[in-house]
Length: 132
Image (cartoon, rainbow, N blue to C red; front, side, top):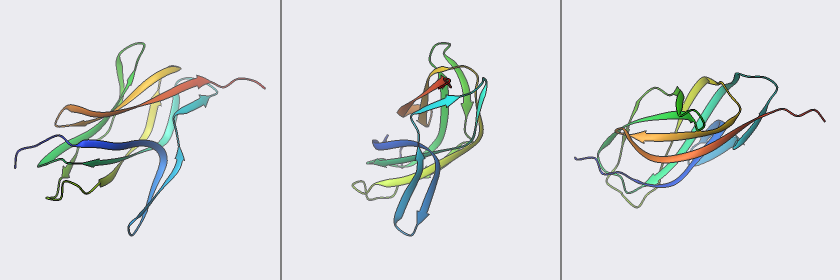
């Protein structure tokens, strides 16, 4: 079946995704990080994605881009996502990346690519830890 891009319902960046039967728990949702020094390493980054309406098989990966430099700073392994013949159902899955290295403070765009087409993105802000 020909690949038809899905509609994105959500893309969440977090420390961990737990699945228990039909329930999903997102642990430590993140949109902003304060780091004491740079480069900063996130030990485990999980991305939970929910989508509908896709068709076919999609070679799926995650890519992180530092906005100021345009540099791609991390990428996940590629995984095949198989869409079922129930386009109204939400297909939820997670991808995990170990030791994500963020070289500079600033804004990062985390993209989900399917067959090399960006289908979703989320921002992640990295700031220097301020003394209190």
